[in-house]
Amino acid sequence: MDSHPLLKTLGIDNLHHGACTGEWIETTGEPITSLNPSTGEPLGTVTGARRPECQLVLARALERFDSWRMVPAPARGEVIRQLGNKLREHKEPLGELIALEMGKIRSEGLGEVQEMIDICDFAVGLSRQLYGLTMHSERNRHRMYEQWHPMGAVGIISAFNFPMAVWAWNAAIAAICGDVSLWKPSPATPLCALAVQKICNEVMAENDCQGLFNLIVGGADEGRWMADEGRIPIVSFTGSIPVGRKVAAQVAGRLGRSILELGGNNAIIVMDDADLDLTTRAITFGAVGTAGQRCTTTRRVFAQKGIHGKLSQTLCKAYSTIKSGDPLDESTLLGPLATARAVADFKAAIELAQQQGGEVLCGGNAVEGPGFFVEPTVIKAPPQQGFPIAWEETFAPIVYLFEVDDLNQAIIDQNAVTQGLSSAVFTDSLSTAERFLSPAGSDCGIANVNIGTSGAEIGGAFGGEKDTGGGREAGSDAWKAYMRRQTCTINWGGELPLAQGVTFDVG
Ligand code: NAD
Image (cartoon, rainbow, N blue to C red):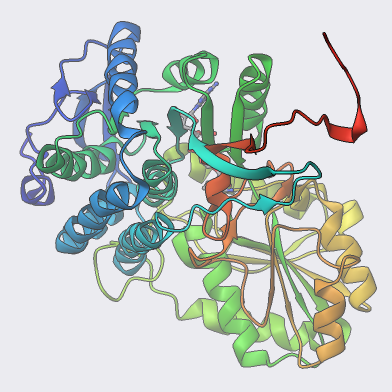
């Protein structure tokens, strides 16, 4: 089989090893074949890592940690600056590889690489801002402060739908925090991981810090190993809720720390006073972008009575203009789903929705092969309580359109599901917006006004509540999850006063 030209451009056409610490390690595990979701044809096969190879990678990573933790944080930032620059140089082919292997459209693939570049830039600045507080000691001639230290190895288990960016959110921040990382990507997107690792290898070689970024290609077994491994103090898991539940229990069982980024079931509330055009565009991008395969995809819309009818028309009109096809073609807005199984899940959801009283307003069909294509679909839904399919995350471009009386009902329905990732309200009313953002409003980790549910910027902390797992990654102070806090008290006087006025005189 001839390699795709993109693999040659990125120098991964001859790479079959599924483990790397800066140098590729010969692996002996299961062959993992990457499929092009647009055609269903294989793109390449990588040999997965077996347990001894995982152990070897971890040993090399821990060796690097011993020295990396002592490198001043701003000097660690310099390495990440170089990584960001290399990603800039390779932005186009990396973005196109994402489109090829995962199926999101080229523009979103490039956007995902930009997200890696952005997080590197952010991490460089952050490397000079790992601030701790100082406190006033109650004791005479004592100083008290807190400082942040690295934790060790961070395990990164990632999902197929963001085959590069999720790694970067974790690895770039972990690196400036003084940690090393081990990445187990989704078995659906091993080539994206090889391409990123190859770039990391160049940066590590130029800075003599091999073992800082490490790769382990594998499936559920290697993920379980990471969750169980006591020498990996932090496991950052991105994926489905059922798997996240297992990983969380395993990591908690050994009193490790997990960062969980799990499924969403995101809603947009549309009030009668909303700008219809803005709302239609936001819902269309939120529901159809990445073929509905984002954790932040818009899956439910609660439209107030006065706008519900008009919105269903404008949505179907917008949907009729969406061109689906090859994600690398500039005019394509809708690429394929990831697998044949995802197409089957799409069909099952449409059937269930109809059985439960939903009415397909547009779309609703899978497209004949090759590739895993489906139509973007709007379903007019009965009240949510009697419509169980809407309580689940179906990873496909299906949006359920509900009618609601008022904001109160919309917020109750929005928050009723078990997931709590992203949410939005469209309104021209300040008090409606503020009510939505108040403690009695949206219960999600992300709450937007007149912006859809997907497409977060890296500067904020990203993540969600309830079954979404409670983890936070990327910006703001999410870095704290990758470090340990140490409270230090220094006595610079000649006495030994005890806290709380306790006396304990000896001699
Ligand atoms: P998935 O749960 O099937 O797989 C995720 C990762 O877990 C893969 O690397 C997989 O190999 C690994 N894995 C599988 N079984 C495991 C086990 N028992 N122990 C440890 N690891 C195991 O998810 P997916 O289908 O790749 O991704 C889609 C899901 O990810 C959706 O639910 C989506 O909402 C979610 N997601 C969430 C976020 C977020 O930030 N909240 C971002 C992207 C995706």
